Image 1 (spheres, rainbow, N blue to C red):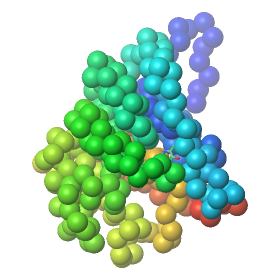
Image 2: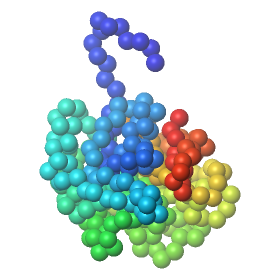
Image 3: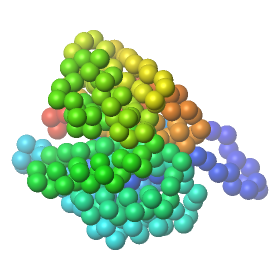
Length: 273
Ligand code: PXL
């Protein structure tokens, strides 16, 4: 970075807002999003929707505390008043009340790019509550999304397919999710599909591209999905096309997995470089 001239007017930068949960240990959630935005040269902003704290006394399960919807609305009010924001990522929302609040703000704000990482189930939530949350997310937020990044499980839930076992299935899921939502889809196979490569399927209604990279290992790394969607968001904020954004994001996350952070938890976390 060059040092700006002290007397010159301040120069603006691409802005990326994430509406997401805090994952206290810094692997996933808003922390991963902000690190990704910074690494890719976007000015990062976050509205926190919930606080997740793993419980080392209980098999590292998720403790989940929602942020009061009024406080979520306050954060978004401050952010939208401070900057012109046209690129937003939505991560974990967590409750129907949060979804109601966030969807209401997004319907007003109408960002040019709305990247939805459709986090459907978080361990630590009651199954009944999770079902309500999933329905609300599909009904209220998915129709607003311009780009959606479902993982293996979420691709089944959003496409209605019973099983996704290979590349052809993932392509069918990506097509079905596009038909349903109208959004650009980047469906992630990750370590869930057999074979030497981690594959993701990009489909925007016209272009279908299977993105491939050699698997780094056979274990899922915490924060990979959050960072992929955040990298897409940063690239869109910088003016990339959706396909360029997807390609850059895949490469960025592969690097973050290669540089993963070891810990005492039973999983490693991505490290954005
Ligand atoms: O990786 C999904 C995810 C997203 N957001 C938050 C999380 C997690 C998983 O732990 O805690 C806040």
